[in-house]
Length: 168
View 1: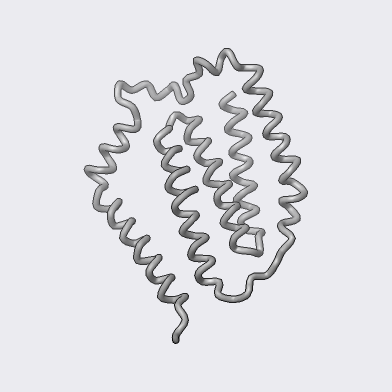
View 2: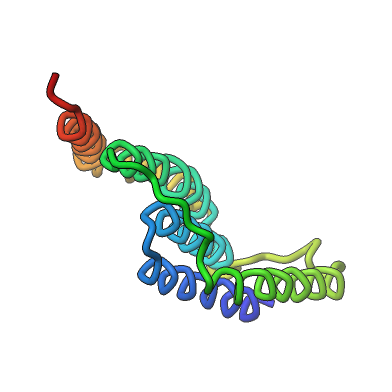
């Protein structure tokens, strides 16, 4: 089952990355990047890194992508052009989503008894969970880089606002 999840979401991450490069509109590219980030979160979760998967969803798919969309909207001061959407999304999107849904439903329904006791990432048998290890490392040894990164993101937002502001 782990191999099937890895193949499905690995292929979805690669397809999202390729779609990111092929898009003409920056908002569609940002949405493709969300697909990549969510696929990576599932891959992290399947490897037993639950904290990293949750951080991937909350920080990257949530906060950073909202920041990207905000900056794209802020810097795109011109008239927005209407597009009909990506042709690749129409061709591969709906059948691909249906195939993934059917495959995951089949796996979950056929292995429902085994899923109740599944230990994803079972090779990580530590007495301490990986959440406490990551949090203690993040807030002791890596506190300064963590805070410097947040200040850099704040400066980037302020710089985008200053660049996008029109002279009066």
